[in-house]
Length: 139
Image 1 (cartoon, rainbow, N blue to C red):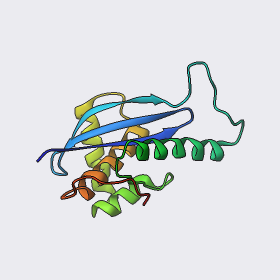
Image 2 (image 1 turned 45 degrees about the vertical axis):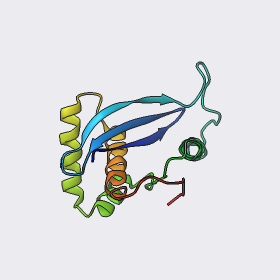
Image 3 (image 1 turned 180 degrees about the vertical axis):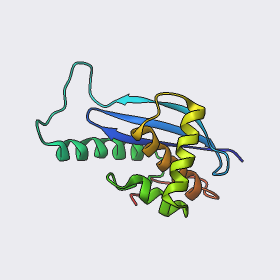
């Protein structure tokens, strides 16, 4: 059975979304783009308070995922790729290589934020194996 997983990497006023399909052995990028989290013309609500902004936009994404009835999986913001490697049971170097290969197939843009979102989507693909979906519950 083919599965799909989507993951977000929050940014100030927006989020990078990456959706993967397939399985852990041959995942493929089926979508990626930026999602606006503020209305057009609006700016981030905080000045020089990047931590507060980061928490605000992460909370918006978590609440949106829960409101849609999706199961929630989270990774630490500062160490997302390291945490993903641990949860996937692979070395950081191997995960970096897999993320680079995904990016080459997908084409640009494929930078740090797309890689972090893709790493989270890989965790979702692995941990959702055998699950039929479910309610939102924070990790």
